[in-house]
Amino acid sequence: MASDSKKNKDGKSDKVKDGGKTDEVKQAWAKAESLIEKGEAEQALKVLRESWGEKGANVTQTWRLAGDAKAHLAREAGPGAKRLWKEAIKHYESGLKLSPTDKQTRRSLNSLRSEMDSKGIRGSIGITLWSDGSPTFAGVLAITMSLLLILVAIKYMPTLLAEPTEYDAMIEIELYPEAAARHVESFKLHAEQGNYDGVEFHRIIDEFMVQGGDIEGMRGSGGYAAKWYGYCSGTLKSSSDACDYTEYTLPDEANSGLSHSPGMLSMAKTSAAHTGGSQFFFVDKDSNPTNLDGVHTIFGYAVSGQWNGVSVTGVDVIEHLSRLPTDGQDYPSDKVPTIVSMEVDGDTVRMYINLD
Image (tube, rainbow, N blue to C red):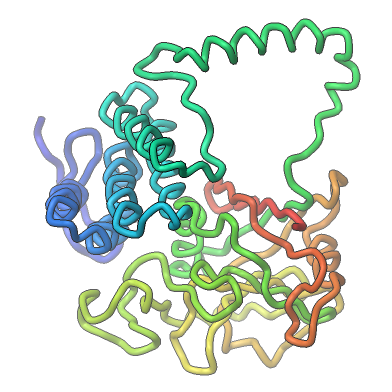
């Protein structure tokens, strides 16, 4: 197939072929696979992260290689590192969602699940119901039970139609790429990659703001940009190799003219310039911290939401969160708001939250 050339947003020429995948993506696959074979799984993940924003990166092969790298790290860490094992499973499953018939990914997923079973690693990993397009023994039992449940459900259909939500709250966010393109891109990439799943709102101050997004330590000490934007911990560098990916930070985009009014989504950072990473905060109702204008980058707004199944405004959800009891360090002391998942639809993101 003939290749086409076009200019990307950085002015570089990308050769596009094979269904829209760039040469950069294919090179990233080859490099990541080689690094995994050498046992350098962390470096392989770094290569895949850096290629994520390229055209054609969000495909099964990328997720499968990410799963291979996580599985390697899990084996090195041992049975006690349940999070790594579960992340590997999640990456394989993400690949299969894009291509359910991909046999290589399916085999890798089933093999890892079998390995986990043999090591007694359970966590929240489910039972394998299908393998290579056919139901397993457990799958046949599940189908039979499902049919029996359907017969029972018919009798109670009116009650079943009132489906309970799987989350306590939801915030629908409108992002502002025209005001803060890099912040929006990084936020969406973290959301798409599931990096915010399971992350807590660790700082709550009523009539001021609610803050979360620490994808490393949960309590506000960590978090990094989703890809390389030229800065390591706020310092401009010439190459992404100048620091570990956990030190990637965002260049400030705070001079957009937007103001920190109720419902605004803004990037948390240190007092130094260009130190935003993954942490963010929502401005609370009746709060107007104008001292943050021009310092912290505003990149979205909470347009609507839900609280305990009731449709409300986005600001209302933020206000409910801000009123949760906290300790002397502004950390939730009773129910901890935790992000269940995030759904990206263009420049709209829906954030689903549980109160654990």
